[in-house]
Length: 243
Ligand SMILES: C[S@@+](CC[C@H](N)C(=O)[O-])C[C@H]1O[C@@H](n2cnc3c(N)ncnc32)[C@H](O)[C@@H]1O
Image (cartoon, rainbow, N blue to C red; front, side, top):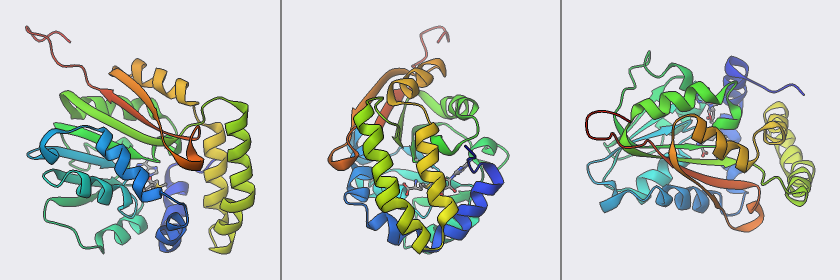
């Protein structure tokens, strides 16, 4: 199964950027579920004084969820696709939101430096050629005790959920993607979810990358068992500097 990766994926998102917001709006609860995952970060006081990184921010749907649920936070949105970012930047944002064009694999080269109090990544990780180095980078960008929320299509492992996902791809996602002229991108969506970690496997991956307090939370609606919020924490430093 061929998946789009790196520059080929960024090109596909560049081409798909024009229709992206229209297509995700057809998914009931898309924006509400992003807000739910953003709230699950649990940052106190509306994120007042916090720095939050939105990795794979796309056209800004996840950035908007963060900006709404964390009205006090400074937010940096990063994406590898210039076309998606152009759409994001064209929207009205408060001064505390800014965007950087960079692949998640090259954040430091693009001048994205920590510490961040939280990192949010919605629908990013299954797109990466190798999620592990990016998870380690994210861990390093977080302040000790900082929080990660990954909002991702990661199947539960139950056969019924895999069948629902296949049916949604066949009956809804592929036809709509094809009609929008973005057949390759939406075929990639279906395949990348099928090829990605199950929810328990991704939770284990987070643990191996050095996160603690890893939790997997369900999302409501048709995406139950298909999309999850993964919460994790960079462990705080122990007195004496040991981790
Ligand atoms: C499905 S979109 C999600 C966008 C947004 N987070 C949302 O919730 O609507 C995935 C985004 O991840 C970006 N992306 C994929 N691979 C990336 C990488 N290696 N580095 C940075 N961004 C990447 C894509 O360009 C795309 O904008």
